[in-house]
Amino acid sequence: MNQLTQKIKWYLQYLAVRILLSIVQMLPLDLCDRISHGLAHLFTYRLPVRKKTISENLSAVFPEWDEDKKNQVTFDMWRYLVMKVFEIAHAPRKIHQTNWRKYVKIPEPGTITGPLIDVRPTLLVSGHFGNFELGGYITGLLGFSTHTMVRKLDNPYLDRWVNDFRSRNGQFMLDKDGSANKVAELMEAGGTITVLGDQHAGRKGCWIDFLGRPASCHKAVALFTLTGGTPMVLCICRRLGRPLEFEITSPGTADPERLLPEQADVKSLTQWYNDHLAAFALEYPEQYWWVHRRWKDSPPRKADKKRSPAKAA
Image (tube, rainbow, N blue to C red; front, top):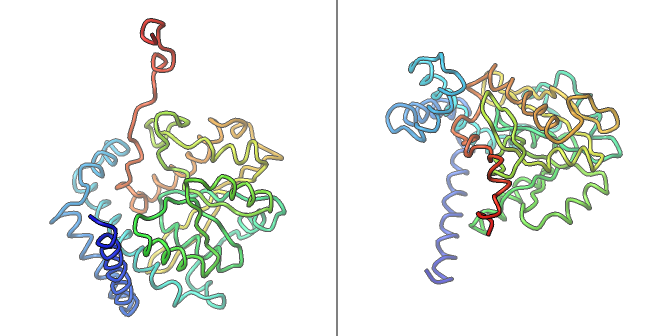
């Protein structure tokens, strides 16, 4: 495919997304909710999407569940995932600085805003749970700019538009590749970085237990706090009931100036924040992304790390 053809393809994809988003923004939220029910039924029963991955994840974490229970949680998960897209499209038009309390509850705001107004940098850690995108939107709406490290989209038109859309409210994107200098500048200036703590980091990551199974995590998340003097704040945006009704809570904070014994090193701190994320996944399983391949590899064996002289040769 030549360069001109590729650009035309990208631009047509961009136009299709913009048109679809415009249609979604014109639909009432109640209708969006009914559509999410229909699509969830389709993805669960009629044309199963990633059924094997979802079933394996649920069976491993909840071995006592029968097929009906797993199907019900799968249905609810897809309903929330589809509704998440609708809510992101509607949020800028419906949620403003004067009415955000109508949609979002923050039971203990000081646990989140306290570190954000600190002169030190802040690391907000969330997971594939609830509507974490809306959590970032609300943080920006309250006047706290955040920077999130993400992989650039292949389509440059969509990538530019998505970044512009998010940055209107103070959510800025950083390319995961080559952003080390920018991150260092943000930390030096007391900025705020947001990350998803339950992303697979490959065999060389930090291996911990997540929901009873070995999972690999990025060591850099813990190192921000342990070596960079950056307070880590766990942030969960949990769905409550009707569309665009959420609760934002912080189940814990790791402050480098007064770390708990279970937060003292990379492995223990990584296990600590994953335990908190796991607790929400167990209590509200329909809001966790079981479609997400959290467990991909197995921990490397010692033999992998120390090869025999003959094998090395």
